Image (cartoon, rainbow, N blue to C red; front, side, top):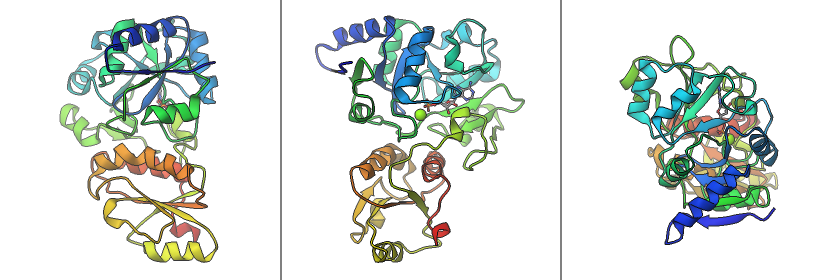
Length: 343
Ligand code: AMP
Ligand code: MG
């Protein structure tokens, strides 16, 4: 299949949306930017189209997809009930990087979207291109991140081309995504709302609106989690990645030790710690600016794949704000490996 790039701004933008809507309506895949990462979209009511998302990504079929909507009112079409807590959350955070898990209405969405679960994840993205597309089509769009399964999520249209050229009909190029890590997933089917995946909206922000929320025990660990997708190795560059804790190891010594064993090392870390002894150093923003680190993380992980590094060291980041999501992704990308544990 020939993949077409459509650029979201400029005089032809309106025709582009029509073309994308047409492709989706005829069961084809369209990748588009959201404020978190690029999504790989199919009409969420079209079973065959949804299955082609799993095929294109190489995604395990037990990993459900988030359904994107362009209007808050649409939740009622897919969720069995919408209580006050849900309303408060949607009012406060939608459009935005928060996915809410509801019990689903039966027989509305294509069965594969929810991978056999009784629940559905819904989100209204905060990106002009995503919203314009959703509002033009007026249908729900199932859209996981537009990468091959296991790879870092795409934050630029070129990343989507790298992974999915020839597998999708259209890629809408809307530049770099702003948040850079995926949405927070909040389960509203538990007694106390539970974070299944940390992301663009933080626990503190949620608690300010609805009071206490819990975190799934698996967040940040390598245990079986309740967001089915979180159990897989994720976000991983090709060379083995080790999370590097500055409190317990010295970067310079680590680089020297790796060189002494005849290996090349790429480092992913903050600007302030730039070290020219590393064979490659990819900066992801300033120390203590987790929002910058989130925005640049996946690009840096993908840049590692363009090197011939044997080892990647990713420097641990600050846990406040979206920093928790950054560390969650690094932990997954490392498969739980830290530099110390290698000694
Ligand atoms: P992605 O869009 O690739 O970031 O993947 C979507 C994530 O949302 C995966 O980790 C899924 O397991 C999770 N997810 C989607 N729907 C549900 C659901 N109904 N219950 C729990 N997690 C979900
Ligand atoms: Mg993904």
